[in-house]
Amino acid sequence: MIMDKSEEQNLIKECQQGNLEKFGELYDIYASSIFRFVYFRTRHKEIAQDLTSQIFLRAMEKVDSFNSSRGQFSSWLYRIAKNLLIDHWRVKKADLNVDDFWNLSSSEDIAHVAQMEERVTEVRELLKKLNSEQREIIVLRVWDELSWREIAEILGKNEAACKMNFSRTLAGLKNEDIIAAILIIAIFLKNLF
Image (cartoon, rainbow, N blue to C red):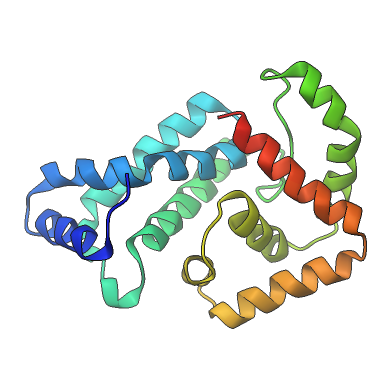
C-alpha cells in the first residue's frame, strides 16, 4: 500500500488524537517490511511474527511520542524493532551474537540453498570480519532497501556518515565477487517471502 507523506501524517495525527482504529492503516503500510527486518535477524518465522506484533503494539501505545520533526515514521518503527530485537536476545540469553544473523534456513528451498552454500559460507566469513555497524548499514541498505535518510535516523547518524561507511566497507572488501554474492543472497532471501 503506497501512501503519500501528507496522508500518512494525517493518519498519525488521528492516532495521536485517540482514533487508534486508524493505526491499522499504518500497520498495513509497514507490516511486511518490519516482518522482513525481524525475520532476517531471528531466522524464525513464529518469533518474527510475534515480535512484529509486539513492535506494532508498542508503536500504537507510544504513537503520542512520535514527532515528525525528529524523523520519519518508518525510521521510528525500525528503532522500536531494533530495540525489541535487542531485548529479545537479552531475555533469551542466546549463545549467538546479536549481530550474527547471517544464517540461512534450509527448510525453504533445499536445492537452491545447496547451490548457494559455497557463496553463503564465503559471505558469512567476510561479514564476520566487519564490525556490527558496517554489517547493519549493509543489511539496512541491501536487504531492507531503506533510504540513506531512514538508515541515518535508525542509527542516529547523519546520511553522509552512513553513505561513507557503506562505501568504505564495500571498497575495503576488494573483491567484486563477494560484493556480488552479498547482493545475490539479499535477492535470494527476499524471494523466500
